[in-house]
Image 1 (cartoon, chains in turn orange, green, yellow, brown):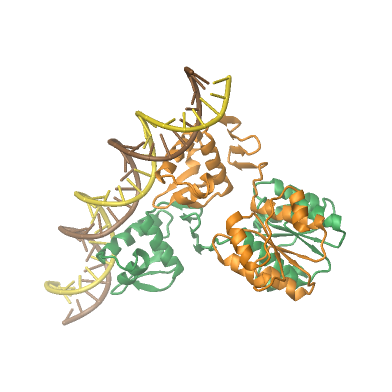
Image 2 (image 1 turned 120 degrees about the horizontal axis):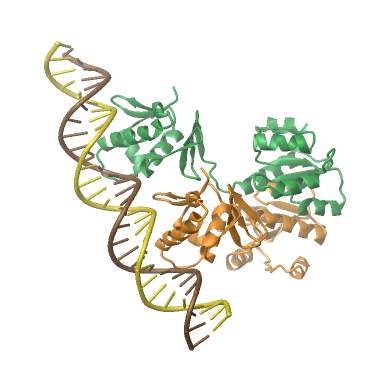
Length: 212
Length: 212
DNA sequence: AAGTTTTATGACAGTTTTGTTACGGGTATG
DNA sequence: CATACCCGTAACAAAACTGTCATAAAACTT
């Protein structure tokens, strides 16, 4: 039922009948969100949620717990296990969809329609362009994505490996030194507006975007 | 009531009676999370939530909406307005706390929350930098690691051997006198912010980080 | 007060890391 | 099909960092 409704809404859906199946499906499909039933044969939903939270690869995937119980203590346990939200059966598809939208919005804050700003530097995601004090800056697609990622995560160091994962994609084989070149290109593009100082080198670690 | 309960749990709390007050309190206190009543005099909770979502500084602050209405359409509207979660009055403090914990965990994922502070000296682990009264201090990687170790273990003397083990790694062959040089370099870096007195020599033993 | 031990400091050379430029191949665009 | 653009890599230059030493300055002993 749920799967049908979600597919109808344009989501891509995978089902699993128990924790073991789920584990396989998750590592295969890399979902953006997990709906988890409280009652599962074998490992319970709560235990499974806890396990997902402990693993690096799945820690950040939001979880909505589905449960028939309406007991309050169970609610609390469900949330503390690491679930991000829960729904008591019976629930309406409408509410489920709203909660899913809400969670996905949080996890992917940019959503193609965001505008990032840092001092006079503005990155308009919908228009896919970068303005420095109202003057448009020219840069390649990769530099744009790199800058976008940086502006989404200000004040944090990223290693070249992390940047490859997040900007290029998860399984690419590219020399880490290549990052340096793209950083150089990005800096040169920002230079035109005088904002190249926002891209900072952290020796021995990687790069950082920060106004300080 | 809510404020009291949260304070009791160790959270720092600020109250506001309407949207305008809230705006001031938010820009002043920079909260980690916002509890928002659906019904507010003047600007409604939903509209206020939307406004918070549009602004760069507040966009990422999670919002929990509180409401007396239990109508489902309102729930949906509440979530779609940008609130991250939704609670219907009357709600139990226990459930509120669980939802707050859940949201905070999502926003600050692994973050290690590793920010060390000592007087005006701040070491930001995620950004891998050191600020003295908001001014960035320049230092090499080794000095950074050294300072981090010291700030993790304030008021404790460490021999040069111990420092080598913890900061450099367990099996390195390095002259113990080299420590002196790095201490010197660290002190020089801290000097720029006037915090070099925090690194103290303990003659015959080693070094200590302390504010006294 | 002189002698001894311990720490501070500045300089140096080797090493590692990063910046920069140039180039060949690939892909899209007209 | 030609042109323009972009990407990844390599090679070299520049910069930053590291560990060690020599010497000066303190701190402690006798």
